[in-house]
Structures are given as C-alpha cells and as structure tokens.
Image 1 (tube, rainbow over the protein chains, first blue to last red):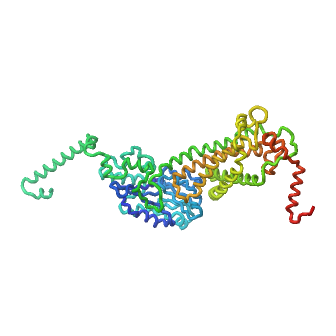
Image 2 (cartoon, rainbow over the protein chains, first blue to last red; image 1 turned 135 degrees about the vertical axis):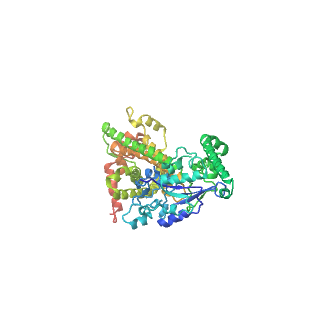
Image 3 (cartoon, each protein chain N blue to C red; image 1 turned 120 degrees about the vertical axis):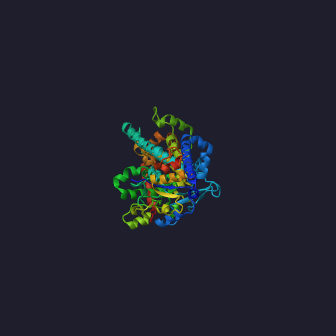
Length: 204
Length: 365
C-alpha cells in the first residue's frame, strides 16, 4: 500500500496561492476555513522562501494521539482522516499539530469551536452517502483515482503529492539536478522518505 | 562545431577522431577524479552550505533553527486569514508527550490510588464513631446560605470531575463499550457540560472562598493538629477551632490550586481572546494536573464528610451538629458556642413556629 505524502519544493514555490484556491474550490470548505496556507519566510529579503502547508498526514500523527474522542483514523494509504460526528471541537489536535492544520469554525457563542476541519488529502471522510461526504469533508478524489487538487494544479510543480517514495524520488532528482551533493537532506542524516513530515518538524 | 569539422575536407576527419578520443580521456579523468577525490574536490570547488543557500535558500540549518524556535520575525507571511501561527509548532510534540505520557497515566494512578487507600482504610479502620453518646443538644454550624453554596459547588465539582475524567480517559473505556453513536453523544455532552458549568463553578467557588476565609485563617494549634495527623497519631483529641487543620488545608488547596484550575480553565474555555496555541498548551497542562490532584483530594474530603465520620454530614444537611460531635472534633469552637446549644425539642418548636409564620394566614396568638 502506498504511503501518501505531500512535499513542497521551497525552491519552486512562487507563493501564488494557487494550491490554496484549488483546495478551497475542490472541497467547498466553509467560510473562514482555509485548509492549505502558504507561509513565506524572510519576505522581501534575498533568502525569501515560501512553502505551502496543510495536513502532512504524519506517520505518528500527534492529533490522533491526543484526541479525547478518538475520532481520527488512518486509511490504508496512510491518509489521516477524522470523523466529524465524533469531533467535539476541543482543539487538542490543534495544540499538538506541528503544522497548524486543524481549523475550527467559531460561529457559536463565546468563541466555542465547531467541528474540526482539515485537509483530507482529497480523500473525503466517513459518511453514509457521497453527498454527505462532500458536504462534510469535501471531495474524495482518491476514490476516483486522482491526486489532491492542490498538487495537481500547482503551476510550478512545487507542491508534490503521492506515494512518499515517488515524491521523494522526484524531489531528490531535482536537487541532484540543481547540483547539490546529497539531495534534499544535507543537514539531516536521519531523514528518510518514510517520515518526511515528522522529521521536518523535529530535526534539522 | 562537430558538424563544421565533419563537413570540412581532407585531414579534418582525423581531427574529429582526435577530438573524440580527447573527450573520452577527459571524461575518464573526470570520473576517476570525482570518484577518488570527491571530498577534496568538494572542499575546493564548492562549500556545501554556500551551495545549499543558492540551490535551496531558506532551508539551511540557521533557518530551520529559526523555524523550530517558533520566532516569526517581521518578514514572516502566512496566507491564511487571521493566522497567528508560525511554520512549525514545535511545542506541540512536547505538550503531547507531557499529556499522554505523564499527566494521564499519573492522574489515573493518583486518583485510583486515593480511592484504593481510602477503601482500605475503611475496611481496616472503619468509620470513626462518636466516643460518647449524643447529648441531644444541637449547635448551629452552617447557615442555609453556606449549605446551599457548599452543595452547589460540590455538585458542580462532581459533574466537572466526571466529565473531565471522561474527556481524558473515556475513549479507552466507553468507545469500545457503547459504540460510536453513544460515545459520540456522551463525549460531546461531556464537553458541553464541562465548558458551560465551569464558569458557574468558578464564580461560586470564589464566593465560597470569600465567605469562608475568616474561619480558615491558620492558627498555631493547626500545626499541632497536623503533627498528630488530625488525631490519628497518639491518643486524645487534637485542638481545633471552627475548622480543623485538615479543613483548612482543603480550603487553602482550593484557594490556590482551585483558583489556578479555574483560571487555566477559563483560558481554555474562551478561545476567542487571541490566546495562542502555546498558551493553551500550558493552560491545559496546569488545568489537568491541578484538577486531577483536586479530584484525588476531594475523594478524601467526601469520605470524611460522609462515610468516614459519624455526625459530620448532618452539619452540612441540617445546619446543626450534636454537642458531642462538636466537643470531639472542634473543641475550641465548642468552648466558644456551648452556651448557645438548643435541644431537639426547641429546634422542632422553632421550625414549627417559623413554618406557621410563613403560612399565608398566620393565627393570632
């Protein structure tokens, strides 16, 4: 089985926010929620860098570990999904998530959080019907044999989505082509394709 | 150039052949050079760090350090509306480890241990009965306002403790036991009750602490009370005023840890004041540790007030305690108020006349 991962090639990202728009469009998410964000470091300086971030579908997902209702589960493809019928909007997944992926509609009184919403890797979520699935979680492109729309529509192919090995291979080829000695992870001897997201959060 | 040389007449093919050989030699040399002395070549030709900074600016070690430290700086941008997040929430993992590895297992041990110890104490030592027979004369201890306050705070505390425990441990028990549909209802109502009753508890707790502070100021004899374990160590009674040392300790625990739990709970309960994830991680840990500790101690308080001591509960239900109870448990207070004791008959009369006074058509005397 595949281990689905996102990877954003910071060298290629031009901060166009196309992925953000594509995601919003594909999943028809509620007002105020933006599953994907583009972060720019050192904006306007010579070492400016942009990176598109959403749920990275961690192998050892912190959200799953801290959820009081146990509403998260992992698909066979390594995609982290959650059941909105069980979610109580406590916000713990947000405290734990390395990437700020979980978001909560806050339309209720006292800023009470609604049901959590996050990137589903365009794999929908648990529901009785297709309509209900779309209503609650957005598109299920994976079921149609398609990859997430954000990556598919990325104009510079900075954002890659797919099996971790494939994505890592593409990225490594690129970096080698750019002339770097050991590909992507020069300062990170422990990094491997299996835990890209996790390592990005913890290690150099 | 190849094309040009190939089209040239005469000895030119030789030149192109020579060029071919020269290229192969160069390639072989380059191969040997790069395989054999790659490290030297790199050191001389390109500094990996410099190369990295041109190949992929922004992901050098310094920048990763900045990203992980959580600093954002003035030139940090996030395309998400009203986002105040940095790129990597490094403290999230720390919070997870603290919560999952320390707070929840040890919370269970502390509360379970407390229940176990008290159960054992009850089985071995048993209930503390009054040593002398009741005199039948009563002393007024708790006015209606304090009783109402106490029971409101107490019931809120129990509901908050049970819902809080469900939020921390429920998933390990009830999801498997009842299935998703019931569990979903159970945990969402736990959260709702916890979040909406919490602020009411906060207000009532503060009112209670203020109204009880005079009786709970520490006195010299309290030290003696603790030395003798509240009478458990040695023989004879230990001096105690209106509140004994244990009650005062419980009061000051609520006045310190209780208020801390209340404050951190409010931080978590109203996420609409712009407090960040880091603040809420801390608030959550403080809240959980404090609340689990208080829950454990409250088991002791509940035991002593109900099963553990004869004659205590009636003080908080009727407002009156027996003289004997007062003498044995609060001797200094007893000395102060012993001349105000009333017999059960007087009490019944008072109650009757009060009821009569409140009836719509009072009889003329």
